[in-house]
Image 1 (cartoon, rainbow over the protein chains, first blue to last red):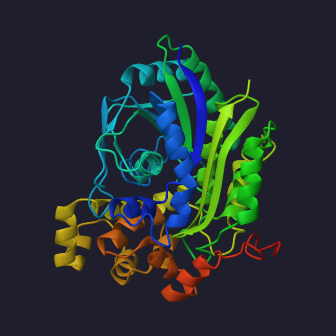
Image 2 (cartoon, rainbow over the protein chains, first blue to last red; image 1 turned 90 degrees about the horizontal axis):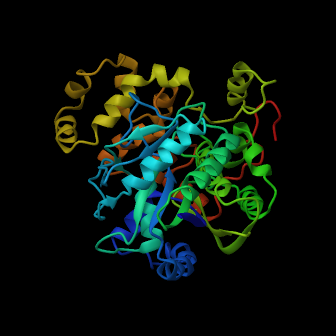
Length: 280
Length: 138
């Protein structure tokens, strides 16, 4: 039986990808950020997950305004890398797991989640930056990936509660897959940041850490945070944190924290990172 | 709150206008800015970037964008583009094509210069205090 063994939360700031690609990740600016991922890189080498369900958002890279799926699942054998305006990142293509992806898609639809199934998909920094943070610069990614893209750009985006429930349904779907697979779920994006208007540059260390505390606890209060609170407290792009709730919802009521890291700033953004395991 | 059936879509959307210096990318903005955003997406292809750089005005004239929108694009006036329904993730393709870092482009929408903005970020970013609500002033 497949099982979800861990959940990882991580920011996915594009500049982190640039730092890795250009070998700047240990300079004075980036070193405090990447040092907070050293623990996780070693841990991932021990864990050797077979598949990551990687929850991310496409930043108007593959999906434009013609199609705006709320929840889309990538079921392809392989995913290419988007050119986001300066050429594609020099990272390996991402290998999918179509058997598990289709299984999850079917299970979710039967559980009342009307998924968009995507059989051709190029992935942007939202997906590749977390892979770089956790696996550095391998010739080939050491894991298969099921991209799960969430619309957090065009409003209304899904509620925190809906995201949490989706996480619960993903857990159920994974656990009903007959093959013995070690599956992790990653929730990416955030934490506080605003990339537009006069309020650009807003960061909120206190709120972000309160959010991380909520994820660690066995309370589910985070799922009921309304959109307006993310917008007011964490900036217009802080709403990406609803994607961490999909990860958290997939881990069950109680979790153990293995690792936690927070750093300000990276470009316009507060960096957050957490590693949780189900505590049964 | 979207989760609460007692709140209507109208209340949900109205709250967005109460955040200082912020345009939430609602359906209304998405409709208004459709062609500006689709133009910006075209900057993801190297051949389009090359044609745009050669003659920006001629390239823009191929798109169903208002004169006001075209002028804002030529000026790289990102606040004006947000008002016209542009979204920052779409517009980022334009400033990426210009070779401008994301944070520098963000700084152009604020009251700060790029060096001031960069220093503010290094010092911990912009505090949300007083910038959460126009009506509430908190």
